[in-house]
Length: 115
Image (cartoon, rainbow, N blue to C red; front, side, top):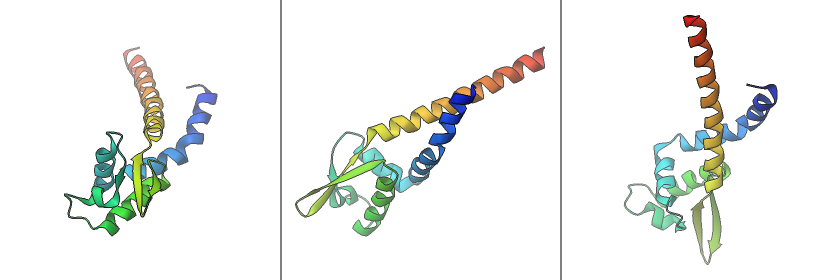
């Protein structure tokens, strides 16, 4: 991998790490899945059908919001949460770069072993 591409990847690593850490919890992944349809949901809507309290949902949403995975806006007395798809696209692009690095490394290893 060229040095410039590696430097770009390294520059994005802290941001990507925050996103992956936020997504590394089953409850938060579930919240993301519920927001994947593009809807905006309140905390009470997101807590329906779960054993979690509104307070627990709020804490998980705060982690997702701090990582940029979701955003919120006030609507009257409620906050509505929506998925930030660009954040997930950026995380996917990051993983694509890492996957290409691994593929290249494995290709070099294979060439070395076979050569």
